[in-house]
Image (cartoon, rainbow, N blue to C red; front, side, top):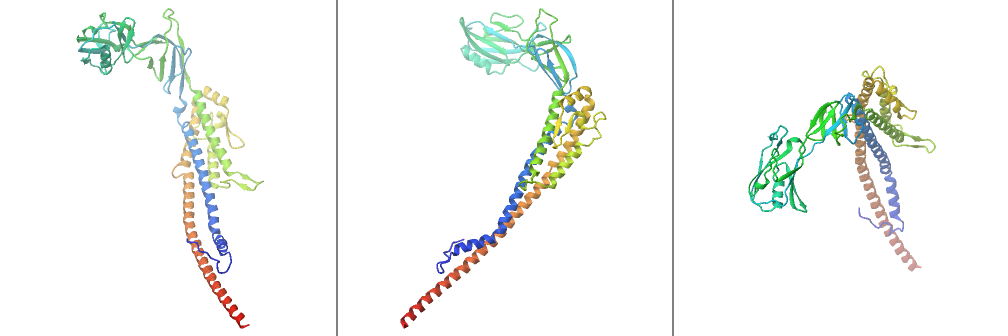
Length: 455
């Protein structure tokens, strides 16, 4: 709106008068802004509640299945020799583990400065444990048509051939030597070479080795004994030696002490179960702390928090406590309530986990403890799903708040147009008054001059 210079004719501070009048007319907008900010604060608070409730949903979701409490841990007594992991498919037990040999790749070292010229080099991988070369299943000989003349060029050609063999050059005191290594470990990765024309000097048969190459490391499988039963693997990880258990071999036991072995123990993962219970307790406590912070009232300062008296929050708190004090039908008779497992409600509404009591329950009666934890986990997961879901209490509340805030934006626009119209009318009225007073002052001055002449 253009600003006029009201008040020139009257000498009054018309701009200030109009500003104050407009301020009075704008009070409904000021009150609306204050109310809207309160709703925005509530919307922000519900955003924090949604985040905390989602964390509770996640934590409860890790307790709602029997599989969550059927985890196992695998422990190797001497980790110098091996390490192990276990899944829910494992079975508890103790086993003697002896590492007989580690898996390794085949490695060949050529003579120094071998003659290199254009020719063909065929590379094959296979197993010679039967006394003859048996090609590796799923592979075919790879023929390299070489047109170079240096050992470096041959190295590059081998590395580009994708033959399952890598090549490098060692610059020894006696000259350059080609080192060939199978890309993966295991007995079926023994290298056989057939050279022709300018590469005939690179022919190597592992059954009847020639002087062209020296075997620096034989291709071999890993071997270990579990309770006296021999198990093998092309790698140093025994992934299928025991159901649900993966063993990684690291070091060979002394071959001169046949009885030497370490212990592999498989047991229930009580630590993991306790961690999941602790995560649930923490998520409950975080939500409880947030509820208290958002709804508290300070009588001394007569100051209420953002959601003081909010019935949606009090309703959610009531639902959570209702589940906590319930006894789900699938809970065990041995531990019908969470408190029987060591999870208790404190006077401030928080939960406390007695890890000793919880661990004792898991150790003494895992089946019944699992039944109760999964029953409550499922109940809290269902409640949390309802709270944070698209039709849940939190979403419904935030939708309502957003709608209210939006309607206030519309109402503000209407009120602002009314105030602008009133301000425009005031300016027109005061401008007209100012002009009229100016004319009257001019007439007064004229009459005064005329009267003074008569005298």
